[in-house]
Amino acid sequence: MKYLLAILAFALISGCGFRPVYATGSNANYAGGMITVPPIAGRSGYMLRRALQEELAIGLPNVTEPATLRVEVDENLTRLTFKPDGAASRSSVVANARYTLSRESGSLSGRSSSEVNFAVPDSPYGDISAQKGASDRAMRLLAKRIVDDLRLELVED
Picture 1 (cartoon, rainbow, N blue to C red):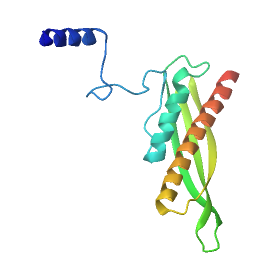
Picture 2: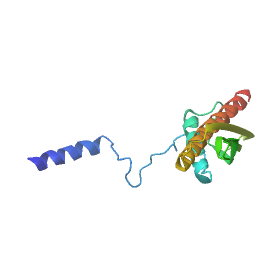
Picture 3: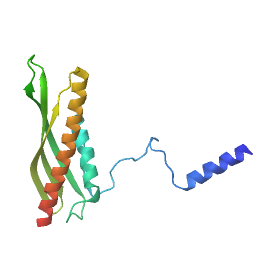
Picture 4: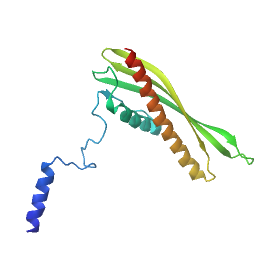
C-alpha cells in the first residue's frame, strides 16, 4: 500500500511541472527577458550583474528587440578617517561603471557611479564583512542608477 501511495505521489508531482531548484540542468536564473547582461569579472561584477538582471526584469521603455547590456566596473576602497592609533574608523567604497546597451536599432553608452560609506569595526574579520556588505550595497545602487539612466535615455527616443 505504501509503494502504491509513493508511486501516486511521484506521478502527481511530475505532472504539475515541479522541478527541484538545485537539480542538474535547472535554469534558475533571470534569462527570460529581452535584455541580456553578459558576465562581469570579479565578485563585485557578479553582484552587479545579479542586481542588473533584477532591475531589468520588467524591461526598458522602447526596447522591443533583443538587446545586450555590457558593463565594465571599477571598485575602490578608500579609508576616510583614522583613530589615534592609526587604524581606520570610516571607509568608503566607490564603484564606477561604463555601460553600453547594444540593439539592432543602435546603441547607448554612458557612465555611472555610486558611493557607500561604512564604519569600520574593531575586529579584522568584521572589517572584511563590512567591506563586502558595502560593496554589495554599492553594486545594487549602481545597478539602479544604470537602469534609471537607460530608462531616461530611452523615453526620449
